[in-house]
Image 1 (cartoon, protein in one colour):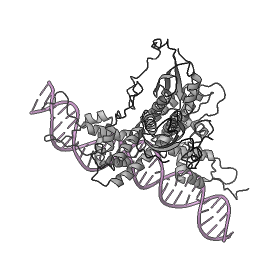
Image 2 (cartoon, rainbow over the protein chains, first blue to last red; image 1 turned 135 degrees about the vertical axis):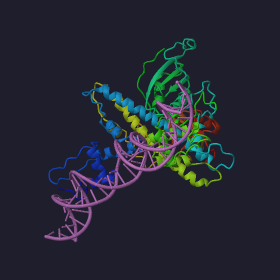
Image 3 (spheres, each protein chain N blue to C red; image 1 turned 180 degrees about the horizontal axis):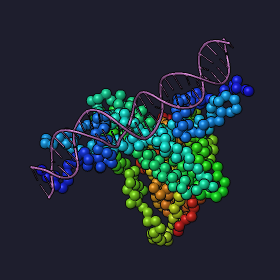
Image 4 (cartoon, rainbow over the protein chains, first blue to last red; image 1 turned 90 degrees about the horizontal axis):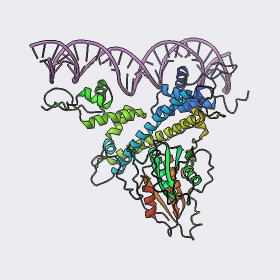
Length: 252
Length: 252
DNA sequence: CTTGACTCCGTACTATAGTACGGATGCTAT
DNA sequence: ATAGCATCCGTACTATAGTACGGAGTCAAG
């Protein structure tokens, strides 16, 4: 038995690697969050695999962001298994994703409030936003000018009311000077800020007449001059920072 | 006493508005999270203001994202008060902001994993990423510690191998054909994804030779041709999607 | 072959964050 | 004025998520 170099990952070593206590691992086991690792042949000791360590770390990290062990258990048991009932899993996953997004939104808000607080901190002049709550309530965030490219961009907060007109035919107005429109489904956006940044990115492209990216729909609606830019190029632009375009059916 | 229209916000009404139980409000009071509202003159009953309702809602929401009541108390008592000791507050606020960022990162990771799971779900073909853990480990974003100046991240696929050279002096190479470099401190980024998107946005600008935006440093390092674009313009580009540039000292 | 560190298991204790109870008092509408 | 609520306060209970304890067995080195 070559155990000289790397000793088997018994519970204490596993716990140290995962950053938890031994008792915690046993507790998770009892809760059914991790299955009891096989105790191979001799020695009735648990021996852990790196996957199990990763699982424990995941549990810990996910707890840190406000999920209960019960919820984590649900997360862990989601499987995109074609043999299992997929739609039920999908429903759960979508619900959890919404949870995650809500949390991200809240964190963004707090993050910005903290930034405001930090920025206000060493100021010698007058200060208005003195506490996080002040900073938060000041945060309808319309303070940023923007206004240059025609459309206003719906800043954080809701205010959907933005472009839209799901399938309306206002593009016929602009048809003569050769415009195409396309709606691209975009994956990988997890916050409103990303959507806005992507929108600005698209609008900078030569040939793009207008672009509206909404986080809620996970979609980008782009009006462009097909003589100057094409859909392939748009997709490339979108995917460069790490998003994915999951559809390509254009609607014009 | 005009109480006909809007009745005073006594504890039960306040609780309903804040979405908590009456006992919870009293509990927060005892914990010192909210001060006991004055019971004005007659009637020894608590009467709440809308600010206090907001405070309670904040407590709730902040709990949802994994902060303990103790931490929330710290958050709430941070004040950018010039009379108070500012540096101590600053240190705390910065620490909390880091917390917030870490949580956002984790949420982004989980969000992406869930998206992958949902995407894999109704597929009829082969499936590799069957569980969140699979989906997470496919995105090996664990290697964060070093090389913060790069744009590691690099979502799915996409080889890094990009430009880079942390602090190397390759800009002297390109010096002769008129290049300036500037490092801009950027506020308003709360996630890695935003940084990447902003980076892509900058790189698309005519006149920008190279751009590296790091979330960790909250900074953008840009090499540009001053004959084609200037710092003012860069700042405009960055601020359009909602970021703020907090410095302008260039370093070339 | 003994010693000390590690493991097993079950049970018991702790901290956090509420939630419920219950008797006394207050408000207000019939 | 009195029934029927809401409110007051303190205390007690609950659920979640560990953490600690203790006795017994296991392993590896001195």
